[in-house]
Each structure stands twice: as C-alpha cells, then as structure tokens.
Amino acid sequence: MKRISGLLTGMCVTIAGLAGGLSVGFAQTTSDGDTSPPKVLVIQREMLKPGRAGNTHVKTESAFVQAMTAAKWPTHYFGMESMSGVSRALFFSGYASFGDWEKDNLAMSKNATLTAAMDHASFVDGEQLDQFSSSVWLYQEESSLRANEVDVAKMRYFELTQFKVRPGHEKDWADLVKLYKGAFEKAVPDEHWAVFQSYYGNDNGGLYLVIIPMQSLAEVDASLANSKKFVSALGGEGMKKVGELSAAAIESTQTNLFAFNPKMSYPAERWIQVDPGFWKPKAVGAVKKTATP
Image 1: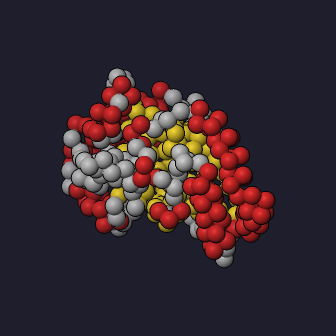
Image 2: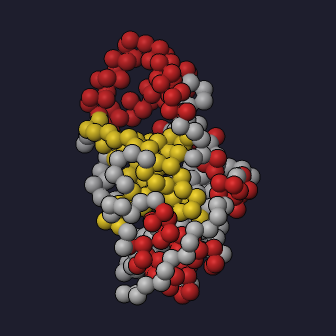
Image 3: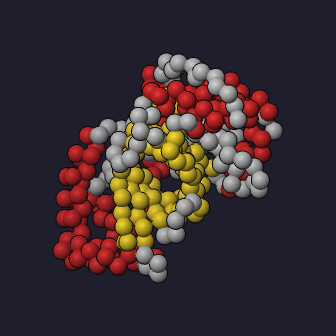
C-alpha cells in the first residue's frame, strides 16, 4: 500500500489514504450514516511475485497499518486480495475532490516520523512485488444503481468488472447502461452496483469499472436467478437492443472476484464498531527490519 502523490510534482511514491477528516463511501461513512461512494477513487494494484501471497505479503503490509495507527492518522483505506486471475492485491481510498487528495498528500509529507516509517515499509514490501500501478476513477452516479444504500463496512467481497468502450461509441455505452439499469430497477429491487470512469492510469481511455459489493458469495448464486428476471423485464426486443449496443460499444470486458483483508486495511473507527471481530483482527507478526536503500 503506497501513497501516490500524483498531483504534487517531484514527490516520490510512499503511501495512500483517504483525505484527512473526510468520510466517503468506499473508505468510510459520515457520522450521519451516509454511504455515498467517493467522487474520486484511487485504486493501487500490487502484482505479487510467485509464492508471496497470503501471510508473507500480509506481514509486510502490516507495517503500513502499524505506522498509520501509531501516528493516529485521520486517513483510512482498505485492502483486498484476488480470488481469481493473477495473484494481486488492491487498495482503495476515496476523496471528495482532487483538492482533498492534494491536501492529504501535503499533510503527510510534513510528518517526518510517519514518512520515514512509510519509506521503510515501502522498501520491505517492494521485495514481495513484481509490479505496482495506480489508477484514479471518477464516480458515475447516473450509471450506478442503489450504490448509496450499501454499507461497505458490512461487505466481504467485491466483484469487479472492467469494460473497455470503443472510441466514438460513448453514446452506445450510455444507452446500454440505461437499459441495464432500468430493467434491474424494475425487476430486481435488491440489486446494487457503483460505476466509475477511469480518469488517470495506464491505458485508461474509455475504461469503466463496475463494482458490486457482496456480503457473501451466495449472492453470486442469487445473481443467476436475477439474470433471468432481467431478461424477462427487457423482453425480446429489449434483449435484441442490448446485443446490438454491446457489439457496437464494448471492445472487451474482464470480471474478477476480490476478498477484503482486514489485516491489510486501516479502517475507520465506525467500520470497527460495525464488526470488531472482522475489522480488528489479531495483529500479525512484526516485520523484520532490513537495510534501507
């Protein structure tokens, strides 16, 4: 877990988190219980070397959590591990604006003790990684479905689907999303998802990310029945239109499953209160100190 100071020229990579004092959906919620997704979502991806997943990686990631906890830092993030695809970890942090992201970066850069701890943790954790990348996404409220009703603190999995939209076919994509959203609103009252559009990152043009939070994998089973309800709600003509728009708009799709890992997360106090047994697990073993660069 590293901070990307992408808006601050010349600053190096250290750690990431939620803007101090902010309370937005995927990282925490406000005191009045608002669970709206963040307007700006930063996702950092660590591709692991063979054999470095599991407790090996958890131990090095725990150094970041320990440093943040010791500093009583007001920022929060959560980590997830892949259950499909290549071995990797994702870290999510949310902001109300790019300006708030910048404020968080500036505040951390002025904390010498925390910065030193993060630099050391980054060096040790880097030995586990084959690749590191980050991306920044903007929330698409009009394309999302009941996202404000989801309390992520109670979730245990994310199903992530990335759509690559063909250049010049943004309207086809928008029409396709409207069809899907309308049919699910009508036929499946408990369905929910959040849509984000890529703003910064590698090969990010025309990328959309659909996040479906789940409390249990039994929800995957339920989605099979929901798909039948969706088809029934659209009817023959509607499904034909979906096929046409999909062929025109979508260049590629990829879906994978990720599980929350509380030992790789620095959750807000409210999240811990929701489920202390999950969000406040026993501490992992300390990371052995090695030579710093």
